[in-house]
Image (tube, rainbow, N blue to C red):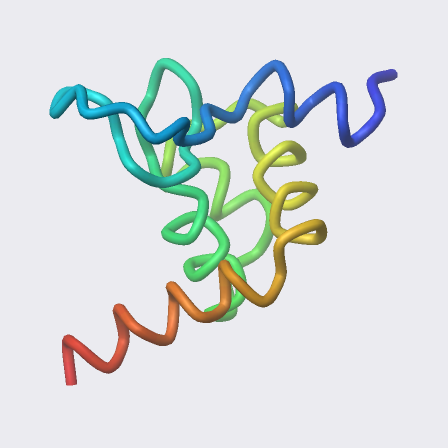
Length: 89
């Protein structure tokens, strides 16, 4: 069993101020590119753990990493979710 920090280190890609346009500028699932805020927003929107994993083709460890990252960066992730929702409305 891995700790939340180990899962985050292994499955989450975090931005490092690079100017490379091919790299995502926000935390995302490594090798899939799905932003953490998108996954968390879907989950918080009333979808179950299993539905969220299936919707984004995530392994259990990837989803645990995303939710662990959210727990550590709750304010920033919720702000990003809210910014996105207000842009759509």
